[in-house]
Length: 410
Image 1 (cartoon, rainbow, N blue to C red):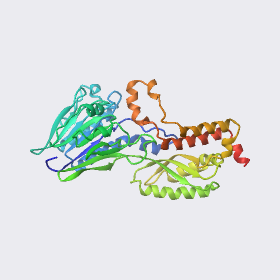
Image 2: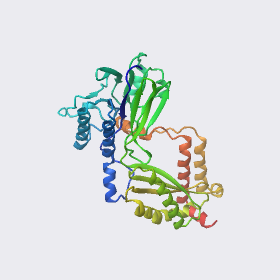
Image 3: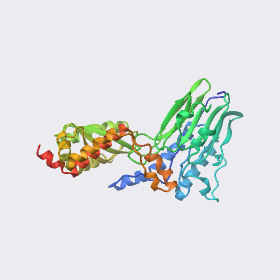
Image 4: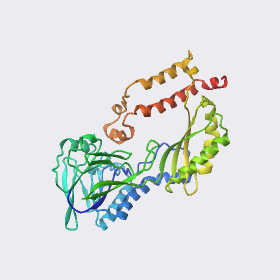
């Protein structure tokens, strides 16, 4: 790369108007927080661009659903574009699965600073800062544009800093020899980054997680480019609400007071990393013994209401979604029973012995909806992910098949 140092912002999957899901029994104040979270997160993305005075902004698709978005979402996006334009910042936008511009209202004009890449072919642009060219930006729109560019694109070496803006899944290992310094990709809800042969392949993830599966901090990416230093990516948090999964280990016979003390200590720790943002927490209690069935009623009727009452308000509120109880040990005696319980637990054990599961959910779904949900359902769970899922299924099934009776008879 030759040329001056500069910075740019990369974001994708704002998905304005797509609500958070998997929540119930929210009090009124939390309903408002959750409803506003996607817009609050998107606002922080554009505010970061203005605050950092970046050279330009890259948007890699799924900003909103142009077929079903609200007037508010469209107006919000236009206002943010106009603010960036007023500061001389260009926007390069490769649309994805939901924001195709052929559904954009003909009477609503985008600011002149917004460059939308075509779907049918890639387009190469040169970004000028002052009187000097600083970057070559190649883009293509469409839900699978990244895969197409990965196969076809060739970029000459020795040029300006080169960027590809596209959307969809791609094999990162295939991109290291394409002479592209930075692949600005979209279509994944969680942040992903690879560095292949000093080439960066990056998904910034959605600024706001939508489900408990998208836990942790979410945001956008500030990219630092310098002639004499490796390109550096910097995470910029933007989420309006943070999903979190956390665990508390207790003795099998812990009392309600013991549980409250353990959870209180853990919540103080979480509040220390919450960045003054509300948190939605799914808890898991782990125990060493088989008393799992006896404790569920206590969690549902006493511990969960207490957590919500004590910690759901204040400066760093935490809403407890649910409390799961997972024993680290399933009693051997249950598995050895000549009963439906024994057969069920034996079948669960076989999940650790099979290869990758084949999910066929997409065969029954219209093509357009597949693109909307695929990033949230793929990839197929790995063995490491499947094991705790199987254990939880075993414990729930054991309860339904009368495990409480075995606990009482121990």
